[in-house]
Length: 262
Image (cartoon, rainbow, N blue to C red):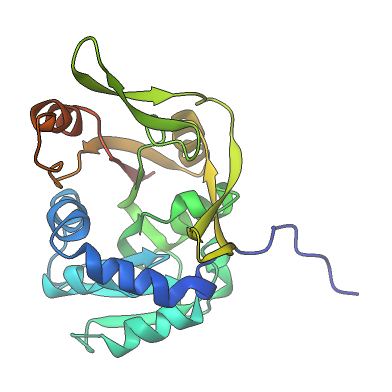
């Protein structure tokens, strides 16, 4: 008799792969090209001879950027549709490869050998996965001693789905970030097509910062660097522009946690 899988079903984005790809293309010169990719390349030693794993790689936009540096990159994603898109857009066939698999079950992918990667990344995806520990344990198994795992996410302190928002202080003519809850971990469905298809959702999992740091440490991955990245997208022109731009530059949109395998 087969032992039941103790993990919940994967919360991949296969059913919204086309929409996600369009959104990423529309993002163009903003978040990915101006913030995410430059930050990843700066925090990781991506170079010829380096072997890097991209967990939940989506359609491969970060993989291609890392491969362009000369690194050899392996992308893994649970969505067959996104993996197919990544393969179709491969620019460096000798340095890019893509595999379909659950990030929580990396040990089940036989071609991924223990301690065979110099670094790993998980970019804007960990907040769509639960639980955390199997992901970290799988990464630690694949990383060489001293190798780095870089995780980039929406900043959990300031971007809590449905529980945080921008507010305007009329008296002080300033914009501020309102946070209604933070410490409570929550599973939150996100409607991908408000108005047209309210039944199409993806799942996000809010957790406080301590949940990430502590589970990483338990898996043998110690945080050695933290970056907080702001949006590079300016607010619309108008009389509030200066105040809105000030809050954009002060309240980060993304959190980058780099940990080291010990």
